[in-house]
Length: 90
Image (cartoon, rainbow, N blue to C red; front, side):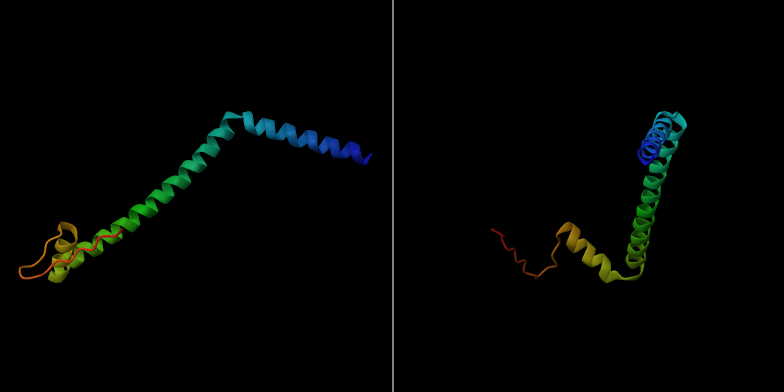
C-alpha cells in the first residue's frame, strides 16, 4: 500500500513537471523572469555609473586640483621641472 502511494506521487510529480515544461506560457514566463532580473541588474549598474559620473563632474567643476590629477593620470603629463620615475616589473 505504501509503495503504491509512493509510485503514484512520483508519477503525479512527473506529469506535473512535463505539463509545466512543455507549456509555452510557462517557458515564456520563466524567460521573462530571467530577463527582468538581468534588466534590474543593468539598471543598478547604470545608476552606480551615473552616480560616479555625477561626482566626477562635481569635482571637475569645483576642484582645480582634481582636473590636474586627472590630466596627470590619464594623459601621463608631468609638470615642468618634475622628474618622472619609471620602474620595470620583471
